[in-house]
Length: 370
Length: 248
Image (tube, rainbow over all chains, first blue to last red; front, side, top):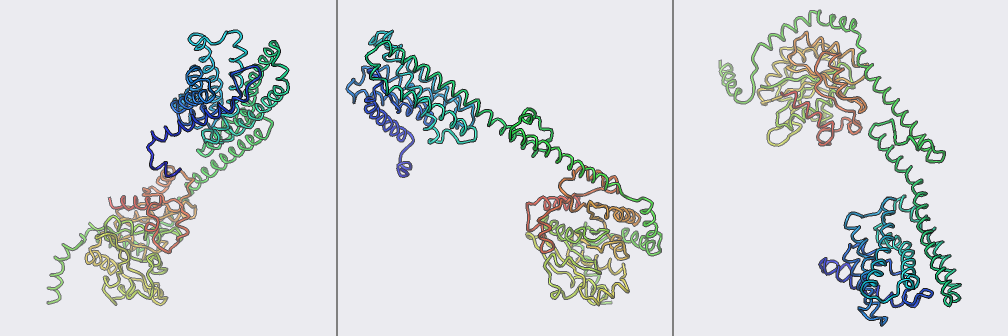
């Protein structure tokens, strides 16, 4: 791996990545096609749908788009559906990588906050809707392969529901391994809560599906009801995600405020308005905020006291005693003589440095010769 | 024009000798030829800073004052910076007998002045830095009387204020041409500008610099010259600034 990295240019490496990812995607499509959904002859459970999303977020729009597009084409070819018959679905799979790639291109990098995590999940769900929507519209206008009201249950809903749920669960996981989601307290709590909640919903829905699907297959009305239940599942997932985001926010927001408060103390600002709502909470965060506030006010008091001490110390000179001491020295005979001598010294010019030394030396010689 | 600078403090423990030694090296680093004279004959100490062993001292200031030698025989080169900057040191005798003799008989200002003048011209000295004895005894007054500049070191400590106020006034009476205060060991939490302002108002004398309290300086104590060992330290920068100002 390391050798490859050194010798290959960036463009070549990207090309290899796209081809490899598309092959993996295509082959996985072949195998997952065996997990066909109840009464939906062309739509299968496809966990690999998370792959183009992941590559789009991490490597940008081109890698994401080509992986989805080529991968789906390879998969269709291998399954014997023909390489180009369902081109609208190739593009739809390409969109799975394209839109996350564009989001990354326009600045969504390094998910380390709750806000960015939510944006990422909105992009995942939105991309699913847009991609499937595109495939359906393309079919309506160009391919004309499906009869619309019937196709809703046969194609569209199964594809949308499974893809949304799977990508919702798997994309964040892949992004954690790819270090695109940076593990902070915020992302860790959001991940834990949302994954726990989504996986419970998905596992129970899957269990129900596998138990009843052989009975369902024969009854058209029940199938319709089953996919309506699928929509409810998606809604539950989304609502559950919103709740978990809210909970995560309740936990991480105080940390941010406490961090800001600590920084303000560092800068010598002790009023701490960022803690105004936090210290009214009754939980541990509220207690911490209260302690921090009282700590800050004590630091402030101590600091002011020390500053005042300097001011007081400075003015403590006993002028009467100073005058007495000075008088005692300057009125002595020794001092008066010294002052006279000093005046004399200052009036005499001083001899400096080498050039003047040369003037002095001959005189010395003269005097010594006399 | 050469300058004679007395470094003085009313009380001991202000870091007077330490500051004098560092100031001398800082001046030498500006390319000046500096001679440090230890006139603190009662309790000499500055030689320690320059790592001068008492056994290696052939002649001291005492020997010159008693006519045993020429003044330049007492000067030892203790620091060189580049081609020009140098520090010479004229130590005081460490022998207790010599110290007692000075205490008993004192010495003559005329002779001391002659010594200063000769060393300045013979070694081409730019700055003669006198490390004085604390307090205001006759020898210290003599040094101040012979100086162009008096640098008074004090700490932000009530014990130093009264004596410093007296020293400033006495020095003014002896008509020393320039006088500065240098505050040493000032804790960080004191506001610098405010400290300068207050000190100038209280002593009616300009403050040339504020040397912050430094743990590194405490650790080094007298075992070397701080400005050499910590060239980028705030204390070093402040001493360099004082050296610049004092030569203006």
